[in-house]
Image 1 (cartoon, rainbow, N blue to C red):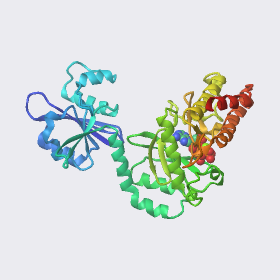
Image 2: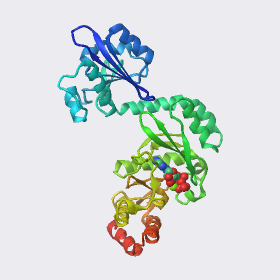
Image 3: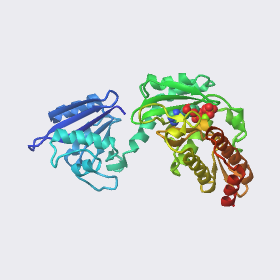
Image 4: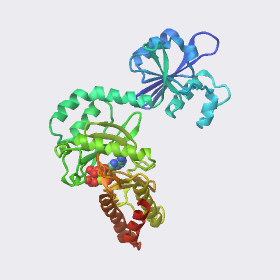
Length: 392
Ligand SMILES: Nc1ncnc2c1ncn2[C@@H]1O[C@H](COP(=O)(O)OP(=O)(O)OP(=O)(O)O)[C@@H](O)[C@H]1O
Ligand SMILES: [Mg+2]
């Protein structure tokens, strides 16, 4: 998303408008006062903003006629379920300082900030239903994602028909068409290369690009997939993003997934609040934040909850795959995660004994780290026993 345009009716009963423009790519902001209806129509059709925002539709019935394809109309004061709230009330709730009756140009600016804070619903004219239909604001992200798909499909196919050996070529496609900003690689793992960049409307993102078959991953291969499929980087990306979304839904602190395209996962970039990249458990001295025991307990709690409540094992729960963001734990690299069952394993599930084996290696790798780096005294077998007791 690059540009938001918000509109408020000027006082005085004539059809004149205050128009606020926020170009997010360059953080450029402009305000136009006393704009006529014709000029407004011209601005909308020539600038083609991603979002046109208004307080409520009743004063703008004809607006659908001037919206270019791809421009979304957001009714800021309306929820999807149809309740309305005043702009000052919303602004105060969102922490935006505001007087009781802001003038139209201030109101237009507030509308833009409210949209960025997630207020409002997307109004669309449906020819099929012959009426306006409403969507939640995050619908824009989803329709943006379909735009992303469309825009890249051709080049993407050309690239992925070949074996993907060079992830940066792939990432570069997205940079060339302006979907992401400048990007840089932060390293190559066993099966993927990770890039950091920024992309509106998400901000800083990480792109994980799978580039080759990994024999180490195969031991955890889903039985329903042939080994041939395992050579496909796209399949690996699909599996990891499915795991991330599952864990996210269950409330774990994994990065949010925005989009998956072929072998690439576009996800939340994990940075510290000072802008530096988050370190990992291996590279961070936890003592500068909290007692390492607190981290150890939290990591074990996470494993415990995943194992017993969500029947999920991480499979690669090791210090480089635990990020420390402003002193808080974030978990990544969940490709090898598996769900387990007490029943006969099928459809990609694994058996309880197999799950215990994987769990043991996850617990052991964390314990080893805390023992060596922080001299914690840990009894691994009794931890495993606790897990077993809780899962029978
Ligand atoms: N969302 C993210 N935000 C910031 N940094 C990330 C993110 N995801 C991964 N990284 C960085 O990239 C490194 C590698 O990521 P990841 O573990 O997902 O890939 P991998 O190919 O499995 O790597 P490896 O084989 O080394 O385990 C991480 O240790 C971390 O430093
Ligand atoms: Mg890793």
